[in-house]
Image (cartoon, rainbow, N blue to C red; front, side, top):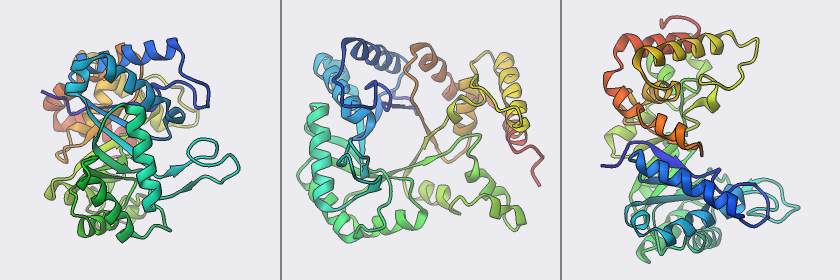
Length: 318
């Protein structure tokens, strides 16, 4: 059975430049993907911009050499971010683009690099203020009719944007990807600060998780490990809340017999919104350690969950 964790492939392609893949990068990616599979993870998250397309390219090589991976892998890829010298011309500004031609060209490029005929989910990476939502929906429906995608995902979008695309699309919207973590916890603050002045400090779109739960849209959490802030990354000297939270995570991990990564991810997965964390490390040991999060979420009690929340907030809930 597949894990609720998703393996994020952003870093498996190596350097973010036009240099070709090398043997060391391919072997590192092979070990990481193998570790993900051994941890029960079968969902893989890509984007056309990752490592100048090399993350998709190396994954395509792995799909070609491993029939079992091709049989089990559930692949999604994202499009719409235009980076100079990457998905845009060298002199262009960083921008977003979701017109019909860009969507099609981006998907065709991803399918070519992934060496596959279709993806499970095609994700709009960022909202483009200049995009015509009706044109976007028509283009996505066209790609689905051609059998190139099976569903649509949205990333970094508001609840109103989700509702609009649901209204316009015939293709099902099956996922919303947002930054969620113990550090980026506005989704919880929005729930507990109803009718409180402090709510304005946490501008997470109200009702987003509730809407997704009620409408069969899975919520995927990017940045789920808070960039390692609570699990070993350097903590700024002035950030006393982060230091206290990291200390609690370490103590809780020792008490529960798991890694700090598992504690941080379990805090997300303990929420009834069915959150699916995206894990992006290429270290096989850390990937294996993250796998314990799903089981830990089933035994993390109220007091432990709120203790982590209180530490991250720096004060008790109202």
